[in-house]
Amino acid sequence: MLLAAGLIAVALVPMLMAYLQLGYAGDVHASGDFAAPEENAERVLERAVHDAGRGLPANYTWGQRDAAADEVRDRLEPRLETLRSARVEEGIAYQVRYNATAAEAYGDTECPGGPDRQFGPCAADGGVVLQHRAGETHLLAVAFDVTTVTPAGETEMTVVVRAVGGVDG
Image 1 (cartoon, rainbow, N blue to C red):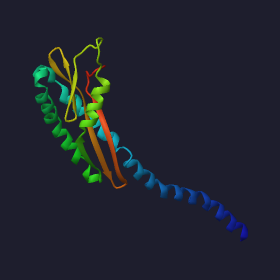
Image 2: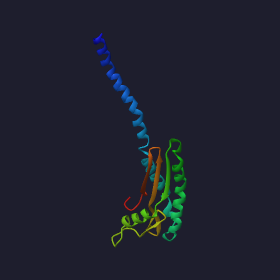
Image 3: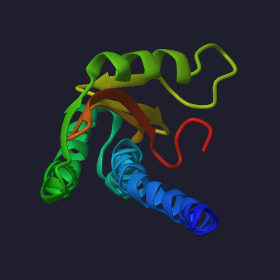
Image 4: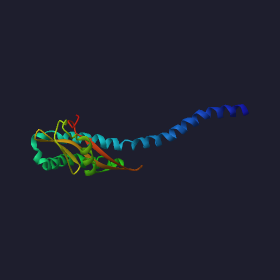
């Protein structure tokens, strides 16, 4: 009888281990669900900035750069609204704002000056960084503050998205 009880106990150990692993699988999965919202926001913003910059130089001279910055923001707004509401059903919300300070800093550091520069000056306008190139206005980057709210908590980040065809692209 004692021997039979010992065999049953030994047989139950693997079942207990499997049960414990299954019990924790839900926790691992849940933490994985909320690990990627920031990366998702960055990908959406990268695509949006790329799309917003298409065709911009042909539309605006450097003297019209304020209007160009307004058009960039107008082109971005539908994508930002989509991002803000895209994952609400999953318990994930995004708050997206332009960051004028980060845009100015990007323009100061990434827009080369001096006699060897290839293009003209840069200007930041409400989070949008533009550059003068051959009399036209080119989009270099857009700076955002993104707050991501999930059931696991809230994170804040500043993202500066380079436009394709920027200073070195």
